[in-house]
Length: 226
Ligand code: ADP
Ligand code: ADP
Image (cartoon, rainbow, N blue to C red; front, side):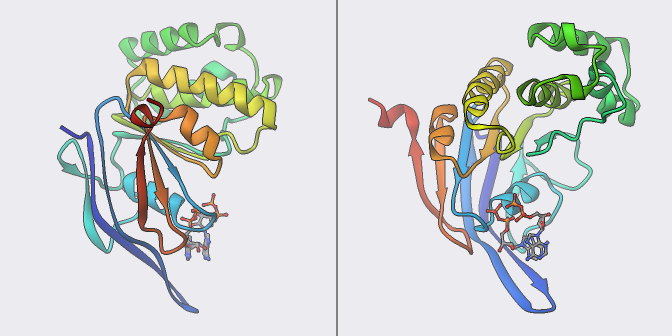
């Protein structure tokens, strides 16, 4: 069964200058452990779609369900990673990784042990006491990802997480993070304007049209390389 079902979703922004349709009748499914990339022209509505899936905004029509439940704001089952890593510069990497647990009041021995394990598995042990400014851009994104994984989300959303990195770093980091995500077994959705990044990381690529976004194509990467 799909983990995520997006059905016939639409949304417009209503501003003083009028109505801006952003998404029109978007439908797709995400299977357990699947990695979906979403590509489309700038301003077509990709971030809006992720915000809807995160439950931060509500669709005007259609429905979005995660494991059978309608997504809603305050839901803790979606992890969201953005272009900026939003690491707190005055905290060590370790303390940054624990931030979400701390906010939720979930600093239990099990969760702390899980944080330790993630730090170790993903090679951040040696940076645990470092400040974010001492890390490379790629390592910072790794730390941001671990901060999200430690919360054990059922779904990960990544909105252009590599666009602040230079080209070569971007290639390395996207490959690296792609592997981490695959090994975590979490379903994930990546929004990017970089088509090669979309293809290299994903099982499926969803191509959106210019605003208001509609689904133009769903490309199954495994099938298309055969
Ligand atoms: P993308 O992520 O594909 O670049 P967005 O989802 O950010 O696109 O935006 C889709 C469209 O909706 C754009 O035209 C954008 O200007 C508009 N938009 C986004 N957020 C708002 C908002 N809060 N209020 C009004 N218009 C918005
Ligand atoms: P992206 O392209 O990465 O989605 P943007 O620069 O388009 O980012 O948007 C950044 C923020 O500004 C988002 O929170 C979005 O909702 C908001 N925004 C974008 N376009 C508009 C708009 N026309 N009016 C109001 N807010 C907007």
